[in-house]
Structure formats: structure tokens, C-alpha cells
Length: 295
Image (cartoon, rainbow, N blue to C red; front, side):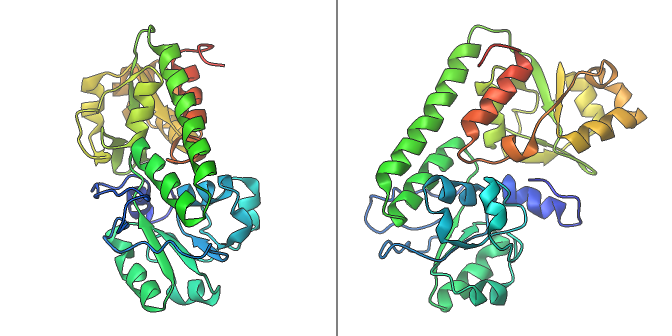
């Protein structure tokens, strides 16, 4: 979910938020979202606006896709999501456009840039849920909470168990394999990679490799090309656009993996979403690191 506009770094934060927030179980009394606002679990929502690709995917998987009346232009899975009106951006959304859709639930990404929007929606009487999904454990919590709000906790548990079973299977399949080191190219100018605070780092580990920047505590960080060369990863992970940039830019020749064309191209719409396809993402990475290991 990386973007080719001036808002790219803001949208990167949308995917890889830096601050972790206190989490609550939807079964506990006094449930709050990641802004600390109370979560209202009452009548089943029938007009949902989801302004986060990850939660849009979850809503569809929980069987409530027909209740969606708005999304962002980056919410592209499943294919039926494209039939939902793309109302506004996920960060600093257009309040009036969203309210014109008459939602009874708005789901936001819990970035500080979205706090004013959350306050406006709540002031307008709209049930508003703001969530960060930075880690795999956050995904499980988000599915459980949305299952409670949608009055389908049983399906939510099934989704959580299915994803976890696939992740466990991938980890078991790669357990005895050598663990290559990888550098994950997220953005080029400035050069950004992932750290241990991201679910993407967790996926690398599950898939049987080691992130050379796992010592970074946050989800992402700006780094230098010279430092990438010094850390000398076995492989470079990049999306299709990033891979072309690396292959065409002579500056990357200082990195052994780039010189040797050891660039593994990933589907960013799959591996960069902490959502219901986390298991599929782990499988795809494992088969890049250890071809044929996972089927």
C-alpha cells in the first residue's frame, strides 16, 4: 500500500505506524479503540465506511461486505471491494463526503492525522472505530473486535484460527532451513526499510529469513544505501516498481545482492497488508526464500 505521490510517507505511516497503543479485548467491559474512545457495540451496523484497506478486507471476510458504503481508492481486495464507492483518502479524510454516505459506522486508521476526523464523526453521532494494526497480534484483536461489532464472533474466531494455522504451518515448514538475510526496500527517496516493530518483519521471520534491520525497534526507518551495503543482505525484497528502480540505478551496485541481481519481487498488495491474507503472504515469502518448501 505504498503510493507514488507527495503523501507517500504519510501513507507509509498509514501502513507501518510507529506508536503502539494499548489494546483491549472486545469481550471486556468498557472497550476502547486505539484513540481511547469508547467502542459502541449495539445494533448491527448496516452502512459502514472503512477507510483502511486492512479493515475493509476483514469486513468482507466477515461476510459484511454488502454493508460497506465507502472505502479509499487503495482498498482493492477482494475484487468486489472495487464496486464500493471510493469516497476519500484514508488519512485526513473528507468529513463531508463521508457523512454524505450516511454511515452508522466509520473505521479509521488510528494515526494522529486522523484524530480530528474521529472527533468530527463522533460529534456527528456516528459510531467511530479507530485502530492501529501494526503487528500480527493486532490483526487478531481487530478481527475479534469487528466480529463483536458485527455480531458474528464465531466467524471472527474461524478467520483468526485459519490465518494462524497457515502462519504456524509456514513457520514449521521453514524451521530447519538456512535463514538468508534480507533487506526490505519500502521506499526509495528517502530510502526506507522495515524494522522489528512491523508485521512485515514478523512475516520475514515466519517465512524463514532474517531482516538485516531487525535491530530497528519501530515499524520503519530511513536508512542509507551505504549502510545497506555494509549489512550485506543475501537478498533484496522489493515491489515491482522498487525492483525496477534498484536494477536501473547504478548507485545500487555497491550492494552485493543488487550486483548479483538477487532481488525478490513481492506483491505489495499482499505482503504489505496486515489482514486476512497474512497466511498467504507468509507462504509467498517462504517460497521466495526457500522455493518449493510450502505448497
